[in-house]
Image 1 (cartoon, helix red, strand yellow):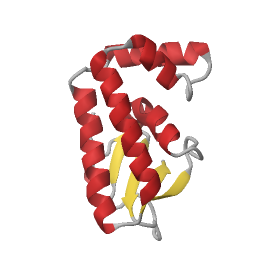
Image 2: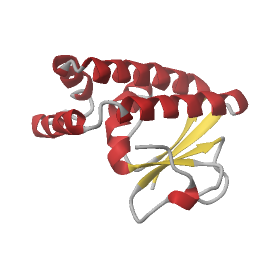
Image 3: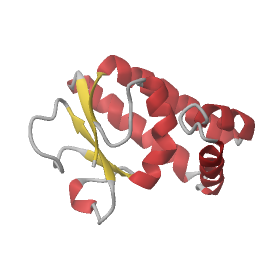
Length: 143
């Protein structure tokens, strides 16, 4: 679990985060990428911080919404570190609303490395904060 650059991509599905409004093609050198499996852990926080979020779409997300997403990522990280299954169930069930799906995701959270996942969330938060200093928009693209 880590943010990747274009030259590190393998044959998987990725989410691309482009600093600014994307006015060219995909797979950009200045972007960072998150593989689908890792991104699945972040989706509840993204969708809580940015209500219009849907999978595999392109969004030009304003700085104010990234601030909300960061708050949700921090909240998610705290829930994961506390290992509070009840809070985690409540948190992720707002996005993974089918019981079988959120139970499957709960199992994935449980099996995720308790050290790597919070560090990954912190790495993403740091990248967003850094890009928000120079850009009013960060484009999120489901590839």
